[in-house]
Structures are given as C-alpha cells and as structure tokens.
Amino acid sequence: MDAIDLRSDTVTWPTPEMREAMANAAVGDDVWGDDPTVLQLEADAAAMLGKEAAVFVSSGTQGNLIAVMTHAGRGDEVILGKQSHTFRYEQGGIASLAGANPNTLEVQPDGTLDLDEIRAAIRATDDDHYPYTRLICLENTQGSVGGIPVSAAYTAQVGDIARANNLKLHIDGARFFNAAAALNTSVSELAGPADSVTFCLSKGLCAPVGSILVGSHEFITRARRNRKLLGGSMRQVGVLAAAGLISLHKMSKRLHEDHANARVLAEGLAQISYFNIDLSRVQTNMVFFELKPDAPLAADELSARLKAEHNILLAAMYGSKFRAVTHYWITRERVEYTLSALRSLLVPEAASQRVTAMGD
Ligand SMILES: *Cc1c(COP(=O)(O)O)cnc(C)c1O
Image (tube, rainbow, N blue to C red; front, side, top):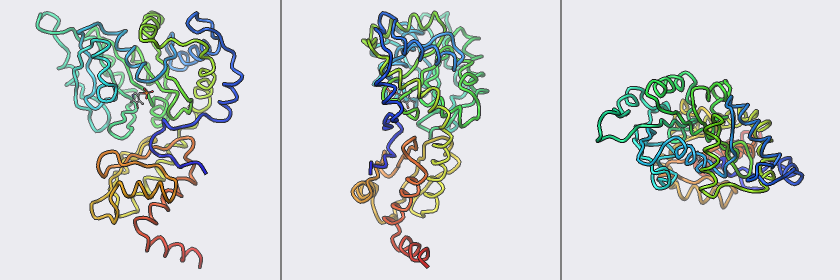
C-alpha cells in the first residue's frame, strides 16, 4: 500500500487520467507561442477566473514573484501579510529579485488584513522620504492561520482601497479553488476585485507541476517577459499543461470531498483527549492540532511510530503542533485508518476495548 501522506497537498501524484493525457499531449514550442495545449490551458484558466489572459508558470513562488515584478518597480512598496507565504516562505525573492520593499501587516485570525491598517500603511506620494506604495497582496486560502478562505466581500473592500489609491491588488491563490469551494462561490467572483491572481495546479488540483498567473492582456504580456527573464519560459510544456487541463476542469470540482474528509479527521482528533484542536478553524483541507504535554508519546515519537508501524506520514511542524492536509489520495477510509492508528498509539486500552466491543 502507498503511504498515507498527510504532510501537504503538494504530495499529490498525478492521476492515471493525467498520466495518459500527458503521454498523448499535443505540443509545440511555448516560447514561440505555438504549444496548443498550453494555449488552451491559459485560455481556459483566464476564462474561468474572469480575466483577459493567463500565463503558465513553473510554480506558485514564480507566479507571485512575476506578479510583484510586473506590478511594482525597484524600491516600490508592497503591502502584504507578515504571515503570508510570499513574505515568509519565498526566500524574500520579491526583495532580492524584484527589488520590492515589503511593508508587512499582521494577518488576522480570519485570514484578512485589517482594512484600517492597510489604509494607514499606504504612503503619501508628496514626501521624498517615502517609497511609492504600488501593490497590496492577499492570500486565499490563508495558509498560516489554518487554510482559512477569505470572502469575496472582503476582497472587494480591499479592491476599493487599492483603486482609490491608485494601487494594484494581487492575490496569492495557491489554494484559490479550495477557497471557492468552501465559500460556495466561484473563482471568478473571488478574483473579480484583483488585478492578478496566482493559483497552483500542483496542490489539491493534483497536477505534477505548474501554476497559473492571470490578469489583463497588458499585464500578462509584461509578465511573460519577466517569466523569460527569470528563466521560467519552457518549450514543449504541453505535456504538463495536459495534466493542468484536467486539474482545471475536473479536479477543481471535487475539493469539497477533501474538505469533508478534513472535517471527519478533525472531529475524530477532537475525540482523542491528548489533542487540542479548534474545530471552528477547520474550513478547507487543512487540520491544525496540537499534542498536549501529558500525552504518552512526544510529537516526534508519534510521527516516527505512525510512519514505521502504519505507513502514515504526518510530521510535527512546530514542536508539538501538527498540520494534516487532506487531498485526492486521502480517501475517507484512509482518514478512518489514520484515526484508528492514532488511537492505538495514544490510548491503546480504549482502542483494544473498542475492538473487543465491536467483536461482540
Ligand atoms: C505552496 C504555496 C505557494 C508556492 O507554491 P510553490 O508551487 O510551492 O512554489 C505560494 N503561496 C501559498 C499560500 C502556498 O501555499
């Protein structure tokens, strides 16, 4: 049996249908603009998000970097979350490569940036001491606070602030389709107020590689130049786009299953007294929980035994804090198995009684 890999939704293997589509993909030279499968993926992605154009990029990190480079010049200021992926986990590329100056605001527990703090962070343009503020970045779903989806109504308010101040709005939507599924809305509704959006094909959407950046024709034309500058323009990349088309049209429609499985996992964890978990924060495919100090095993021992005895991959992220992520390869049955493995390791008496009781 393959491992039950709950470390992230980045671990998703391509589906058999994707592998077949990749093998049979029509290809061309995408730098010359004649790979038909890439062109179709870009056109379909733009249409789905309600934007004029799209560009296929190698990763979410590259998509965000290109977006910042394209919206902002060297020394220009970008307002973004202190706990955002772009600020925390992209090696400071927006500073080192794009030359942008990050102005970070605290991410609220609901995944938003405070509107008054955004307004206050925008620089006056009539003082030579200040950099120009050019861009606001939001993240949706907001990973650091639990994979929390950010509403279209809030996004529209930030869009209004951006327009009123002559700024652009970019959304890091690595898990944008998860947000839309959780909020029961469309990605075009969520993208409406934004000038650009990045989303990952390679996470819950199961493609092996790739992200998409969408925006206006004019923006995407300049973004393509920056992709080339960063060495991110690829050739017969239709083999990857073929998987991306299945992500876009098929995998995007099933994410509520991952969210339901996350809920089952969370509710099962809440039944085990050695875990702390806030069920109200489980809104998409991420489950954050903590092992209490009185547990019979330490977090790293628990991870090691889950792996060795049950082939379950679930690593403690910060000390005794865990993050489990559900995805295409984590079926309901595998969630149930994971819960029974955790019970057997942490509360063996209760687990064996339960087995006996069920045998009666
Ligand atoms: C994963 C992720 C990214 C980066 O995507 P890569 O494809 O791994 O480079 C960006 N933002 C968020 C919120 C992410 O979760």
